[in-house]
Length: 448
Image (cartoon, rainbow, N blue to C red):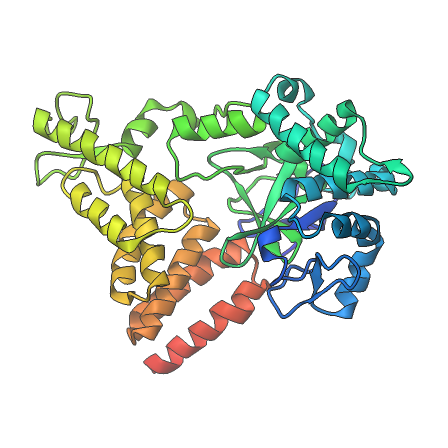
């Protein structure tokens, strides 16, 4: 269901699952680690052939190459000059933005309604904040060096002056989107003009998903009308404490979130809770208090010591597994967490998530099912009931149950996945048509 756009505020009631925006990117760049396995234009993971001139980017067919050529023809000599080195993704994205703006992009508008639109210059640059941010300035200086080397030829450099480059860089880092594939892996970076109107909340009422390089925004709550000043998406990982979420937002977007989830001290206590010493009480316990607030069971020094030890071990272990999760490390952490961390402690949930993915990667299906089932309550609580990650978790569980011939459970999880993904992606999304629907048909056939 796609809403007809009429004005920035319309009296039409918006139902959960309504697609309220579809937008193509103003500029985008495939991540360099995928450049030999995905098409630089449509981003599909298929057999690709390199551009015969620069030998840097690859395309899946002649049609995609021709579609990309109006912009690629300007960057092609620059990428050719860079070989055999790999151009940093941020440098290539800046190069593309510079070229887009040089060739008419400064006049292009991204529409979020029939009459509401934004141009690239309308995006906030946070110039003053970046100028006073040593980490950002150092990053920009390194990118400037790469761009100068790439984009200087016999006619001189086409790199903008430092002030202009900083304003483009600022708009990129504070308005950029990670384009995600069907598995929610980041495969590209993009700027979308229209959707940049949307603000952040840790309790979003809309979600952005992707099909190729096209962005879709769906409402995940019923809304009284389409008012873009009251539509929120999440910019960050919600599986973090309020303190970490606010730090991430401040570091990357230069603002502090003041949503109810971030300013409620109870939220932080729940996310870092210990189990109650009373085995018959399932309350979450603030380890800094003397007693459980539900049953008055005493928090012993032994429990507090064990809690501090396992929290430190878990955080350091997860930090060391940012790139690859190891099942044996996850199992050690989970064993030590048992009886100490509350089942909805966010660090326990993060460990389950890592263990689930690690078990899948090594084909340990029984372990994967156990961890995935335990993960469901935490994902629902922290990501929200209408989040693509929760839908994909159900879909993965359904697929494993199908493989394990547990057909009734497979159908249950696939139905839950369908219920959620219909809202977050739309019924016509390829994820549902090409992956979820065949799994559902197979599971129902096997069960009959």
